[in-house]
Amino acid sequence: MRRFCLLVPCYTSRITRMRTIKESSDELNAPVVTRAFIARAPQQRRTARDYLALGIATCGVGYMPLAPGTWGSAIGVGIYLLLRAVSTEVFAFATARGWNLPPLESFRTTSELLLLIVISIVGIWAASRTEPLLGRKDPGAVVVDEVAGQLVTFLFVPWDSGWWAIVAGFLAFRLFDIWKPYPIHRLEALESGLGIMADDLLAGAYAATLMSLLTSVYILL
Image (cartoon, rainbow, N blue to C red):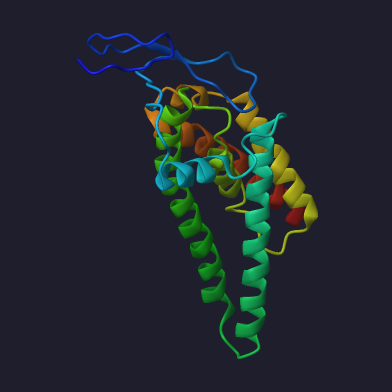
């Protein structure tokens, strides 16, 4: 029988599903206990794929000693601002040549959605690979889920909104990500990287709904 190193001392026996406590970057709810088998990766030289997964999952800030999830959200804000700056330049270039505005607005939204889909899919892969490397369920160092959730928050925010919308969107996502109202907390029980990403994507959807309401009120005032 193959020898596995679990969260308890190594032993040789048939693999069974274990009750595993999930970590979290920043949240108020009690830890989620799931029935899942998490085996630490064998002590051997890590491959390039392992380091790539760790880099994507942690986004370079996951090992910050204080509130890594908040730092992950800040990375999401930065990506959004970069996307908005690039789209503004493209917009100016296109309008100078007489292109119609409605198709350009649609292109902006489509670009953000495509980026979000890519980050989500790659994030699921990276988070799933990182769990056994760190030997923990939903490691707190994994913050790519916060990056994706933060981008969801800005989906319905007009591109020409001021800095108040950026700050409000950041705070709104952090509120729902830490608070985790129903059924966000339940999604953490999903398997591996899917559970890591799903709860933050739903938190982002809640925050996006709030931001849509706030921007509507702002426009009407």
